[in-house]
Length: 275
Image: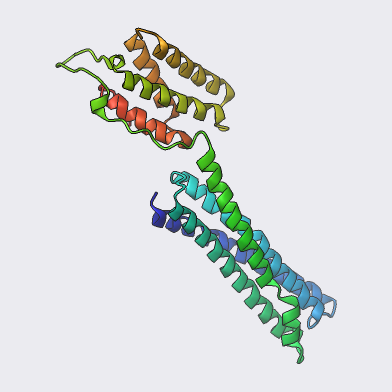
């Protein structure tokens, strides 16, 4: 995975989300101030505390949205689980939390100066600004959330590393135009195909976005491919038709990418080229 590209992409998404959040917060602040002014409480600790509560809640509520953007971008770009990706994701969410905290704390101090008045401003600020404690808790929590997310991907049966297929090991015999391919003559090739079909079958079974009828049809194709592979003398035309159809069917499923890439490489050695 290109970590720099992932961070760049999620930053673009976050700028838009952050600006929307700032506009919404400003509107809510104006409403709180207007209500206080109408009640003769424009310069009061009550108003300052209400505004501080608002900014603290904005900090808490904005972080889940930031995490959703990061998680979705990570999945869209291949869901890599390397230590470097883990560190980059933790660093990004921590930076967002710290930036949100700094913004909330600065706004609380400005509101205190504008609406608090008197000589007790600094003491009151220390009492009402608990954004540091909130941010510390959020950093700890989302560090664990990142770990859970990546560990789940690593431990999922659908998240196995791609199988490496060397064309020299396939056992295909090509002797000119229209030559017959004897892929099943090689035990290693059959084993590779069996493993790939198993991976693709697992992806299909666990993909929540597939229509149930479509899922059942594709799982049946995977089962039929298994049956053909288990025969002492498989019908190669039928086998390759089933295997190709199954491979084409999973190419749009992110979790199936490792199996799809390996199956695509295998098929290319026998003249079947997939996108």
